[in-house]
Image (cartoon, rainbow, N blue to C red; front, side):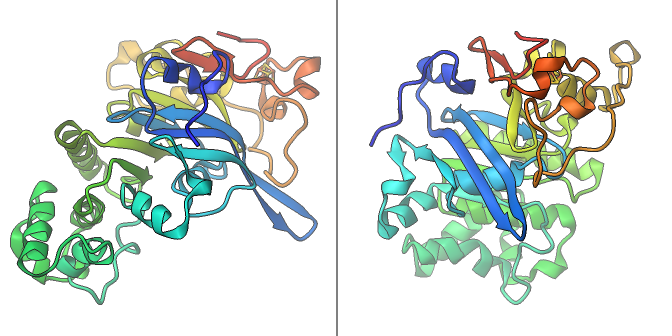
Length: 332
Ligand code: SF4
């Protein structure tokens, strides 16, 4: 089945009318049953991602962004909704076709320490996908491992060493080389720099950007603060309690955010230029539990602008092709 044509007011999908979508997500939801209820980790998310594009997904811990990344790769089954990759509905693929498609969709993890098997050499780690997918063996396998290491700025002799011999930034480069080795078209990068020193974070973001320019990769770049995605994401989706509350082209989002939650996140980003410093916006209370999300707008218990209907009606994510927001009071 091919990906659906998008109505203008359906979340970010309006952009799909202008460019072909590599990844199409529609009304995706994941509810985890627990004793006495369900956790609505992701609750009706839709977006498109074009080839070579980066969509930043930003939210606090518990916003559902990591679950969304795994749903997009179909590493976990959704409760509701659909994921299309290159026009193919992933739910309709048999296990062989899904494995072949998964090769083109790779995951880079947050924790470069925990994500690499300490008993394997770097060469074995980077080459694992090539072997599993029968893409190379013998001399060709060694050459492709060396090429992947070189692409991420590691020397060829790294292949014979073990992960513990490398620094945090180098280990993240190994994780990226492992993803790149199987020639993906999409990488879901789940907080790929959060565990690294700030000085190393910029190096890894620059590397990802350089690889995207050279290889035309699309990234779903998950982060918990807006500073990290500012220079790499062409568009940014802000998640709150399992939903996208604002989605816009980056320049628009950073210059004219509409949702109070986005404005609060932005106000926490340190500005180097004093002229760009924003007044800090403090929100009321903590984020509510996704086990018992508030009725109406899920943000209303923390919102200084909440009106009566905010407590009963869920605001739809609507707006223009370049900027959508889910707010009754501050529409685009
Ligand atoms: Fe605040 Fe209402 Fe907008 Fe929700 S819909 S963000 S409660 S003003």
